[in-house]
Length: 151
Image (cartoon, rainbow, N blue to C red; front, top):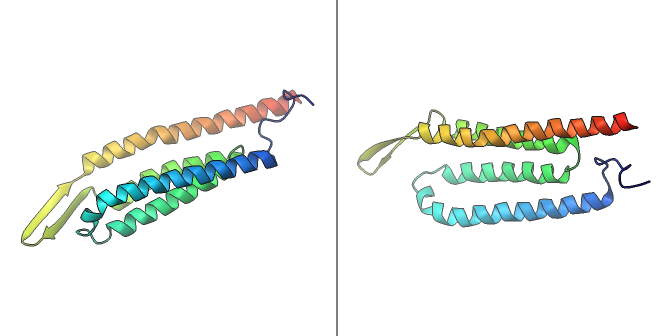
Protein backbone atom coordinates (compact mmCIF):
# COMPACT_ATOMS: atom_id res chain seq x y z
CA UNK A 1 0.00 0.00 0.00
CA UNK A 2 1.54 3.31 -1.10
CA UNK A 3 1.36 6.58 0.79
CA UNK A 4 -0.99 7.78 -1.96
CA UNK A 5 -3.44 4.97 -1.22
CA UNK A 6 -3.63 5.69 2.50
CA UNK A 7 -6.64 7.44 3.92
CA UNK A 8 -5.46 10.96 4.89
CA UNK A 9 -8.02 11.01 7.67
CA UNK A 10 -6.99 7.68 9.25
CA UNK A 11 -6.29 7.93 12.96
CA UNK A 12 -3.09 6.14 14.03
CA UNK A 13 -1.17 5.80 17.28
CA UNK A 14 1.61 7.99 15.97
CA UNK A 15 -0.87 10.72 15.03
CA UNK A 16 -2.45 10.40 18.48
CA UNK A 17 0.94 10.84 20.16
CA UNK A 18 1.67 13.90 18.04
CA UNK A 19 -1.78 15.29 18.83
CA UNK A 20 -1.16 14.84 22.55
CA UNK A 21 2.17 16.67 22.29
CA UNK A 22 0.61 19.49 20.25
CA UNK A 23 -2.32 19.78 22.66
CA UNK A 24 -0.01 19.93 25.67
CA UNK A 25 2.23 22.53 24.01
CA UNK A 26 -0.68 24.73 22.98
CA UNK A 27 -2.28 24.40 26.42
CA UNK A 28 0.96 25.40 28.13
CA UNK A 29 1.43 28.38 25.81
CA UNK A 30 -2.11 29.65 26.38
CA UNK A 31 -1.76 29.22 30.13
CA UNK A 32 1.58 31.09 30.17
CA UNK A 33 0.00 33.93 28.21
CA UNK A 34 -2.88 33.99 30.70
CA UNK A 35 -0.47 33.97 33.65
CA UNK A 36 1.61 36.84 32.26
CA UNK A 37 -1.47 38.85 31.26
CA UNK A 38 -3.01 38.29 34.69
CA UNK A 39 -0.01 39.89 36.38
CA UNK A 40 -0.87 43.11 34.52
CA UNK A 41 -4.63 42.82 35.08
CA UNK A 42 -4.55 41.90 38.78
CA UNK A 43 -4.52 45.51 40.10
CA UNK A 44 -7.70 46.21 38.14
CA UNK A 45 -9.26 42.95 39.31
CA UNK A 46 -9.18 44.17 42.90
CA UNK A 47 -11.61 46.96 41.96
CA UNK A 48 -13.97 44.65 40.03
CA UNK A 49 -14.90 41.74 42.30
CA UNK A 50 -16.03 39.15 39.74
CA UNK A 51 -13.40 39.87 37.07
CA UNK A 52 -10.99 37.17 38.23
CA UNK A 53 -13.67 34.47 38.26
CA UNK A 54 -14.95 35.54 34.85
CA UNK A 55 -11.50 35.45 33.26
CA UNK A 56 -10.56 32.15 34.91
CA UNK A 57 -13.77 30.51 33.74
CA UNK A 58 -13.16 31.76 30.19
CA UNK A 59 -9.57 30.48 30.17
CA UNK A 60 -10.57 27.07 31.58
CA UNK A 61 -13.31 26.48 29.02
CA UNK A 62 -11.16 27.85 26.17
CA UNK A 63 -8.27 25.58 27.19
CA UNK A 64 -10.56 22.56 27.42
CA UNK A 65 -11.94 23.21 23.92
CA UNK A 66 -8.42 23.82 22.60
CA UNK A 67 -7.01 20.61 24.07
CA UNK A 68 -9.95 18.43 23.04
CA UNK A 69 -9.85 19.99 19.58
CA UNK A 70 -6.17 19.16 19.21
CA UNK A 71 -6.60 15.64 20.55
CA UNK A 72 -9.25 14.98 17.92
CA UNK A 73 -7.13 16.48 15.11
CA UNK A 74 -7.54 14.48 11.93
CA UNK A 75 -11.19 13.70 12.62
CA UNK A 76 -14.41 15.56 11.94
CA UNK A 77 -14.70 16.28 15.67
CA UNK A 78 -11.64 18.53 15.47
CA UNK A 79 -13.60 20.92 13.28
CA UNK A 80 -16.67 20.75 15.53
CA UNK A 81 -14.56 21.72 18.53
CA UNK A 82 -12.87 24.53 16.59
CA UNK A 83 -16.26 25.88 15.56
CA UNK A 84 -17.48 25.50 19.13
CA UNK A 85 -14.43 27.38 20.40
CA UNK A 86 -15.05 30.27 17.97
CA UNK A 87 -18.73 30.41 18.95
CA UNK A 88 -17.78 30.23 22.62
CA UNK A 89 -15.48 33.26 22.33
CA UNK A 90 -18.20 35.29 20.60
CA UNK A 91 -20.91 34.16 23.02
CA UNK A 92 -18.80 34.70 26.12
CA UNK A 93 -17.88 38.21 25.03
CA UNK A 94 -21.52 39.07 24.51
CA UNK A 95 -22.71 37.45 27.74
CA UNK A 96 -19.94 38.83 29.96
CA UNK A 97 -20.35 42.40 28.76
CA UNK A 98 -24.15 42.16 28.72
CA UNK A 99 -25.24 45.45 27.14
CA UNK A 100 -21.71 46.75 26.66
CA UNK A 101 -22.14 49.52 29.21
CA UNK A 102 -20.37 48.98 32.50
CA UNK A 103 -20.80 51.19 35.50
CA UNK A 104 -19.61 51.35 39.04
CA UNK A 105 -18.76 53.47 42.02
CA UNK A 106 -15.27 54.19 43.25
CA UNK A 107 -15.31 56.02 46.59
CA UNK A 108 -17.49 59.10 45.89
CA UNK A 109 -17.22 58.86 42.11
CA UNK A 110 -19.83 57.12 39.97
CA UNK A 111 -18.64 56.16 36.52
CA UNK A 112 -19.98 54.53 33.38
CA UNK A 113 -17.92 53.03 30.56
CA UNK A 114 -19.43 52.35 27.13
CA UNK A 115 -17.74 49.27 25.66
CA UNK A 116 -20.21 48.61 22.84
CA UNK A 117 -17.74 49.65 20.14
CA UNK A 118 -15.03 47.45 21.67
CA UNK A 119 -17.53 44.59 21.93
CA UNK A 120 -18.47 45.03 18.27
CA UNK A 121 -14.83 44.97 17.18
CA UNK A 122 -14.08 41.92 19.33
CA UNK A 123 -17.02 40.00 17.86
CA UNK A 124 -16.07 41.04 14.33
CA UNK A 125 -12.48 39.93 14.93
CA UNK A 126 -13.77 36.55 16.10
CA UNK A 127 -15.88 36.03 12.99
CA UNK A 128 -12.94 35.06 10.70
CA UNK A 129 -12.12 32.21 13.13
CA UNK A 130 -15.67 30.98 12.80
CA UNK A 131 -15.59 31.26 9.00
CA UNK A 132 -12.19 29.53 8.86
CA UNK A 133 -13.47 26.68 10.98
CA UNK A 134 -16.56 26.19 8.82
CA UNK A 135 -14.49 26.27 5.62
CA UNK A 136 -12.01 23.76 7.06
CA UNK A 137 -14.92 21.46 7.91
CA UNK A 138 -16.19 21.66 4.34
CA UNK A 139 -12.68 20.98 3.00
CA UNK A 140 -12.28 17.96 5.31
CA UNK A 141 -15.60 16.51 4.21
CA UNK A 142 -14.64 17.10 0.58
CA UNK A 143 -11.32 15.24 1.05
CA UNK A 144 -13.14 12.40 2.76
CA UNK A 145 -15.66 12.17 -0.07
CA UNK A 146 -12.90 12.22 -2.71
CA UNK A 147 -11.05 9.40 -0.94
CA UNK A 148 -14.13 7.19 -0.65
CA UNK A 149 -15.12 7.95 -4.26
CA UNK A 150 -11.64 6.89 -5.43
CA UNK A 151 -12.10 3.47 -3.83
